[in-house]
Length: 89
Image (cartoon, rainbow, N blue to C red; front, side):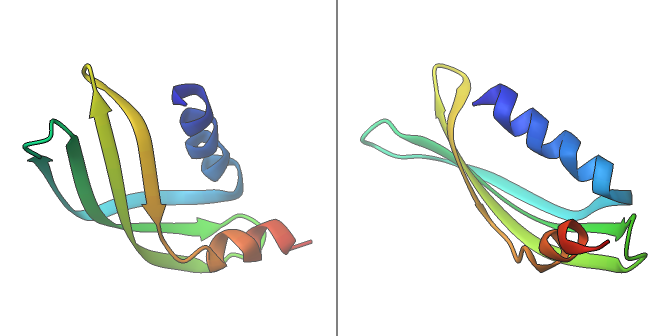
């Protein structure tokens, strides 16, 4: 999973510039059944290399931990900006 996630984040830097992450909030919940999840909210901003459009996108990520490593990550965000940049000529 680690390699896939890193490749995905690196890919953003090939189609967007001036990437910023702001308004970050995170907390970790320890469930009595033993599950550990970190929930993170943030605003992702960047400018499309092809379109020149500046995007701002509120995001929410949930990460499940096992033995000190993230084993599952759920990502919720509007992918309109990503789709627009990938479709741009």
